[in-house]
Amino acid sequence: DGDEVNTHGTDPTDSDSDQDGLSDSEELNVHGTNPNDSDTDGDELNDWIEINNYGTDPTNSDSDNDDLNDGDEVNDYGTDPTIKDSDGDGLEDGDEINEYGSDPTETDTDRDGLQDGSEVLNYGTQPGDNDTDDDGMNDGVEINQYGTDPLDSDSDNDQLNDGDEAYVHNCNPNVKDTDGDGLEDYNETSVHNTYCWNSDTDGDELDDYEEINTYSTLAYDSDTDNDGLSD
Image (tube, rainbow, N blue to C red; front, side):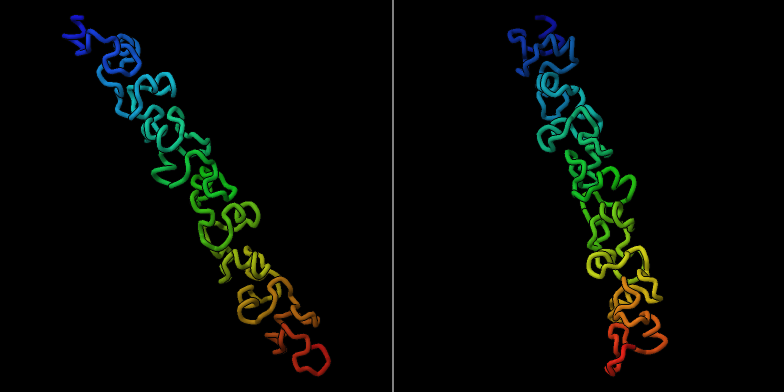
């Protein structure tokens, strides 16, 4: 009793002075916690709960050193306070929440087919935005299907964004002149009204470039002068 009163300041009439479920003796001699404070490290988790429910360190507010305190991990984010990277995506929980705005319990926050860690560490894309360059094409599709740059809305620099090339015009977003007829995709689709994927849009056996630049005929009309003979 003298130690309790004179040294530890605990209640000699109560074996658990702070009512945290751990006896004063356990706190002092086993766990190194404060027998007068039910939450020794101030992380909003009771010392007994840390030890018996979560396996966290009741003397360290951030047991896994991920820059989130244990109470926030348990009560606010649903993350594991003993593992830095709860979802195993290659990003620490604290970084996901504080830096990238991604979900530390979801490996692919934006559902674009790329893990959050890969987006940040390998591709430079945003794990919380499934179309980082806003070109109308999902980041995962750019990387895994088309091989386009998810950070550049116009990968081939032909003045058409990658999404429009692939989904609207059926062009190759990696090649300026998809059909190889000498006319860039932008000029075909936006200037001459020809197909970027067919070098002879009107099927008159003259390629589009020849019609426009050599013969001054309409590349989208097989009979420019309407004389009943194809160009």
